[in-house]
Image 1 (spheres, rainbow, N blue to C red):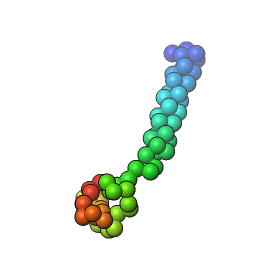
Image 2 (tube, rainbow, N blue to C red):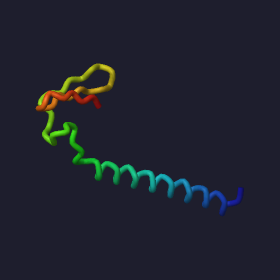
Image 3 (tube, rainbow, N blue to C red):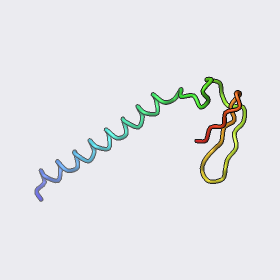
Amino acid sequence: MSHRQKRLVYISLFSVLVVLFAAGVTAGYLGRHSKICKDGKPPREQQDTGIGQVEYLCHNGQIVTK
């Protein structure tokens, strides 16, 4: 592999990492105001189920698992 080919590979990898990072930041920014409950209010209670999920109890009695 020549020096030019190595440089092209490194630049390509760096570009892919930058694009993935930017996509993650954008997804986080756009999803920052997503509501858990359908009524738009914050949940009344939350409980850890112990398996990596959290149950949220909404004001209207709805239980949401995330």
